[in-house]
Length: 365
Image 1 (cartoon, rainbow, N blue to C red):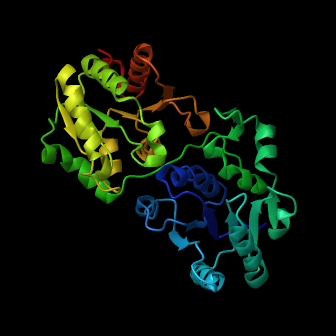
Image 2: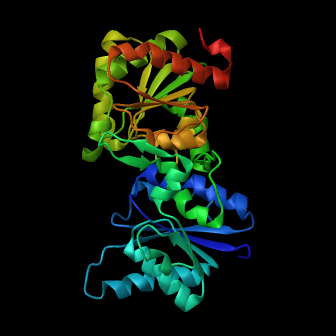
Image 3: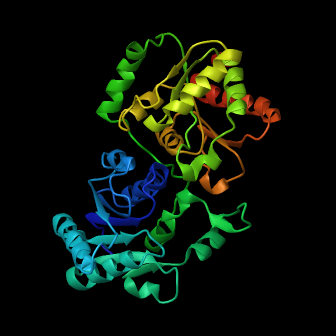
């Protein structure tokens, strides 16, 4: 296959920040393999307008970003759906289409249609029998891919699953592209840079104090089971304040402002000191600017955790149970389970290692 110049990537998945941002490792791998190619992402979703779209639309690795509602609202829904896809294809004129969805019927049919009408090379996952016929080139199934590389993790439901950041590399293996420890990535936008330069003055945060960013997160009903125990979180943050002398700054979405206010009220009774609440005060494009200002970021398994990892901010990610498919394994991140007070000392040591790796041993006082 000759080197493509325009690659259209199709993803049909949850519109969550972490779910989409994890794909950036695959985008980087594609750019490493085809440095002259422009990358375009087409997201098929049932929830158009999600906040992640604003962040991903400005991603530095993407030449273009498109969102199409995949719900069929009427009898002629397929025709309307394909018309939207065709407009995007006509605008991009891709010479390679990659289907990152291992099961989707819509994405498979789109690839078959583009092959027939536009003679575009299409790549997909042969996840189920005969699915490979939809594509010009197909990769083996997720199960075969993971077994060959020993990437399966046993989950709480006793099922083996592939770590999220590797999922896009199943289809990329058809192009002989391997992950090779490539991390997810994100660059600070001008909006983020402006916020980082101004937010201390705006919120009255001393210029000479290091920042401990904290994200309670997991505020949507489907994610509440991932939210850390607030008493344990308070104990951890209190120990980190005392050991490192950092000012605590809470972040979160607007709908999480109530819980952050409650946390501050509860936490301040036992651990007096500087603590600020930025929940609801940052736009999604400004959030990376705040995270880049943090000496250390402590977060639940939520969107800001993935953003911090992508920015290479020292990050301590807290989980309520062992969930390795959601972990990132890089020197600037530590993913840990926090169940009881007995876990706090080891978490403080993890934080100390993260601070040393970036700022030097003088932070470990």
